[in-house]
Image (cartoon, rainbow, N blue to C red):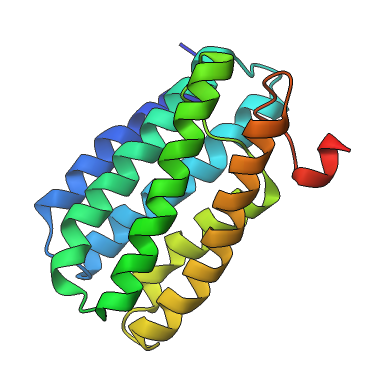
Length: 176
């Protein structure tokens, strides 16, 4: 088995291990950071060793979804957000789902695009739990939602306008 896929698989296991620890405790944050490191390393290793594969890309998307869902399930109950921000987050999620269904209908894949905006959104989302202790949650949410709105909209437009699937598209400008 390729080392990149082992790193990705470990992120799935580590994601579920997060449920064993109280949110924002040192052990939770340690496992959380390990999940983030495997996310960065798996793609880097795959590209460096020239073992990038369709299977690895799909496994990475599954690992990302496991990590995101586990974190949401574990952290949402402790985060108090105003209803307007919750509605905004739900609208972003709806745009993402619409984009996923369009991509599946056109290209028969459930993978998300690897645009710069999506990478930026993911990076910001990753740092949210690490900043919860020091920065106001509403400010963090406002920043993340602004970037996530742009990236979700960009991905939707790309999926609508693209004639062929390219998960590694950098952004909307690549279409033109």
